[in-house]
Amino acid sequence: MPRTLPAHPWAFRLAVATEEDFAVVARLFAALHTFNASLDPRFALAEGWQALLHAHFVRTHNTPGSLWLLAWVDGPDADAAQGEPVGLLLMESHLDSPLFAQRRWAELVALYVDERARGTDLAQQLVKAGTDWAAEHGFDRVQLYVTASNERARAFYTRAGFAPAQEIWRLEVEPQPDVTPPPEPTDHMHPELGHHHLAIDLDRD
Ligand SMILES: CC(C)(COP(=O)(O)OP(=O)(O)OC[C@H]1O[C@@H](n2cnc3c(N)ncnc32)[C@H](O)[C@@H]1OP(=O)(O)O)[C@@H](O)C(=O)NCCC(=O)NCCS
Image (cartoon, rainbow, N blue to C red; front, side, top):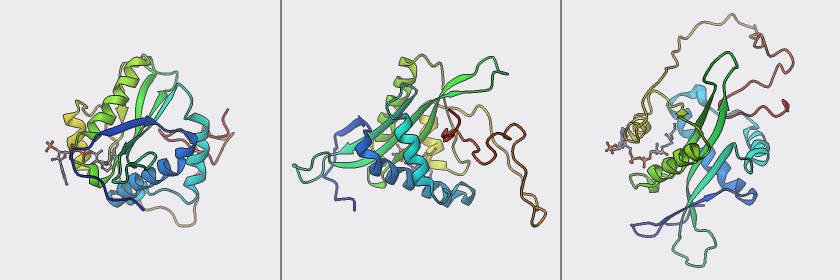
């Protein structure tokens, strides 16, 4: 269970997540997606997400194409080894289809700040670390997805200098009962894997 945080002002420590940090990464990732699903149930995580995230984390956390960053704050117990985890940022290199001339960007895949640390400059520090990472790695832009009704995140990103470049629009349709949608036309080799900006495509190597 999270401990009590010390009195403000806090000194946050940002550190790249190590293999031992996976449980912390998963806890913050779950909190982010529970929040997203509270805004839009279509964004709920699937059963078994933890094993997929774990495999993806193990495979990518040491690669130059991703940045898994945790934020820690010292707990009241000065001897606590790492303190309390209060933030998560995940950046990944993204490559679009070769149909497009400008295929590559840095994607801000996940950003979460513990409720107790909101309204501080932690979110800004995490995003700055992510955008610095992107620039240092030669990217000319950072892109992200944000739920349309996530007013707080939208306000935060706007203040951080982001602006909408494209929107996802949705229309609900009444599905024919007992019909399973067919796989993506190009997905016949791996019919069940799917894809996402969090690139969990484990068998495609
Ligand atoms: C998004 C997030 C990282 C931003 O960090 P934060 O510390 O909350 O950000 P800040 O408090 O600095 O800024 C949020 C802005 O929203 C405003 N705000 C606060 N509560 C709000 C609310 N309920 N609705 C709308 N705006 C709100 C703040 O006033 C601030 O704007 P201002 O500086 O113009 O006053 C954090 O809220 C979070 O982790 N949220 C849950 C997960 C999430 O949404 N992640 C992003 C997914 S894309």
